[in-house]
Length: 146
Image (tube, rainbow, N blue to C red; front, side, top):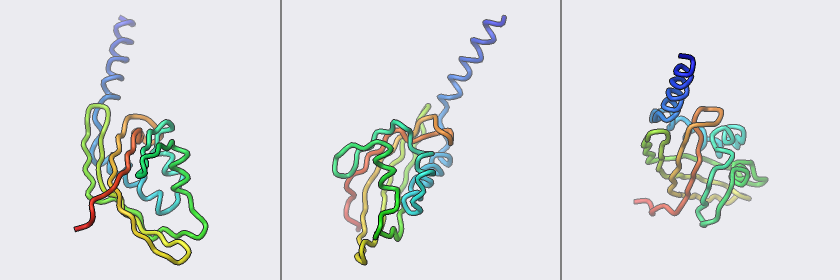
């Protein structure tokens, strides 16, 4: 009987961990991640990004979590005026979630403002201090605004 109880416990634990996340749960994590660039909050970003996250930057290069955290940090002479995500779609799956959207930010560097738009796709999986973590991120060119 004890063996059956342990078997059921592990089976139910595996099934529970494979449950899809709620859309609101993933939107909240995605918002924490996005806001971290505006606030330069590396602790918040680190809590969302998996230690072994795969990141493809907009120039096609690959980055790890430490490389992405460098982008979150404050740069001398640069002010982030805003950093936001728009057009966000969340699709939960069994044990994961996919997110697509557009990132938009404006920075002022040495008195000169620039606006950037990029499309992104992220994959979240169970784990990390918030229960779910970003394990894949791809950032690419965005279509010109209409």
